[in-house]
Every structure is written in C-alpha cells, then in structure tokens.
Length: 376
Image 1 (spheres, rainbow, N blue to C red):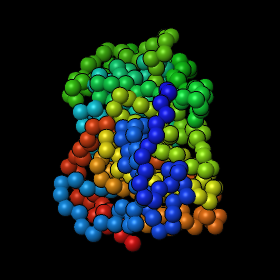
Image 2: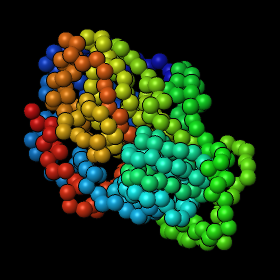
Image 3: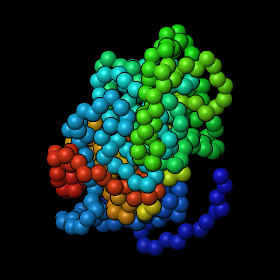
C-alpha cells in the first residue's frame, strides 16, 4: 500500500516524531482515525488525558473477570456469550469433557483461542491436537468436535456473515510475524481413521443464531481425503515473532493476526521493550474514533494495566480517551534507567469497526472501580 506524502500543520509545542522525545511535564495523546491506519494528530497536554474525577452516562471503560463465569455444556452454542454486535459474537466457553455431538457454524468463520486445556480437534479435514495458547481458525460450514479429558477455557470469536483472513504484511514481507509454514492443518491420520464408524451422530448446526440438529446413522466425519485451501488452521502464540522497533512504540495493529472486514484480532506476545531513551515504552494515550477496543488477558504481567489477572477482559468504547495506568506510566519512565528490558504479557485484542455490546452478565463478573484505576 502506498501513501502520498502530506505536510501536517503544527501549533505551539510539538514533537517532530510521534511517541518520541515528549517534553518533560507534557503528555502526548493521539487523536487517530480508522483504527490507526488513517489521519492522526498528536496533542501535547499539560495534564494526563485520563485524569477524570467523575464519569456519568451509559458508556464507560469496562473490566470483566471472565474467571467468574460458570462452566457450560461441552457445546460451543452453549458457551457464555458476553459481547456481541451484528458482525461478531464473542463467548467464553468453559467445559471439562468431550463434545458429544458435532458442531457446524453457518453464520461465519470462527476462531477458538485456548486459554486453558488441551485435547484433540476432529473435523471434515482430519485431526489435530491442540494445547493452551493455540488459535484454531475454523472456516464457516466446517463440521467439527473437540475431544478432551481436562478442563478447557476457550475464547471464541465469530466473524458473522464474514470470514477471517491474514493481514497484509506490506514491505515487511509475507514471512513476517509468522511463516505460513508454521500453520498446522488437520491430517487424516490413525487417530482420525480410528473414529470412523456406523454409530449415530448428531450435527448441531448454527445458522441465524439458531441451532438445528441433524442426525446421521453413521459418523459424519468419514472423510477419506481432500484437497484445497478452505481448511481449519492452527497457530500458537509462541510461533508469532513480534515486529520490533527499538526507537518507536509501534501501534497495536502492527500485531494483527486475523482480520475480517470489520474485526481485527491482534496477538500481544513477549517482546523487548524499546531501548531508545526518548521512545515511549507503553501504549500511548489515544482516542480511536472508529473502533471499539477490547483485550482478553491470557498470561504474564500486563505492563500497561494494573491489577489485571489472566482471564480478565477490558472493553474501551470508541470516542473516549484511554491509555496506560499511572503505575505503568511510572514504570515506563523507570525503564530509562534500564530496570526492565522485556515484556512477558500474552493477550488477544479484538477491535471492532462497529460498536460492541456487552451482554447482561452475572453479578461479580463486571469489576467495580475500573474507571478509578487511572487515578494517581
């Protein structure tokens, strides 16, 4: 993609490079458009843009503790949905036994991210083992099931009436972040052939967010062979090699893993912290006025947020300023003295071009006082 050279206007005190060499006592905020891809200005404030004292109204920055959701049946259509809009359904699915029936999503592609657990994935195309930290991207219309004997906790993301694809890597090349060779696909191996049989199977097919059950007198997963490129793929976050910049804090969209037409799924994996003394070392204050931003926290020390545990989830609606917590901002300043060299967080970001709605959730799932966590 090519962009014309533009000549932005400037007024008062400003920096020549965004996110770098911010004058002492001032705080930079990015006012950006189109999910960090569009026009942007960088405003230097004399106070932190998150220094609010009161917040009133229907929308707010929200923290959820998904660990407090109950387990559900071993069927993806019984998983606890907690966020949605017309373009996506996001659920947290907790179960500890194998799926008794097959599943098929007729509404759109579906990503499974395994926060906890391990097991076997069987589908029209064969068999793959899975473990904690795996993504499995399941094309719309694929019939599948999970076999497990341990507890699984799975974040599920649907591209409603859409499909997930890989982002364009541009001048970094098609092997950046992860080589396509690291993507695993199902195999018709001994484990797959062993599950052939004349036993009755049911396919729980979801379409228009309604479930229809179709019964067969044999195992529907009886594939003898296939060829093509419409196939589930598996990717573990450990196979992602983060794009790095010592001298500039890169925007979150650099870490994009899967894209639909309206949903961006990014993976934040461990990486070196910027080493240049003048470079910002935490996510910058910003308001992104076209995308709602949400993050699922998988593991590690979440360097831009305080008091965040694995299994928590944040939602920041578009149009509101947000940025690092005060302790994170202070820790970033300490990095200039070389105290911390590396991040160890793993998180999944889900950004949506259209507003996201939280479902009505059980008491205790929404964490109180999240807005106050930005107070000094």
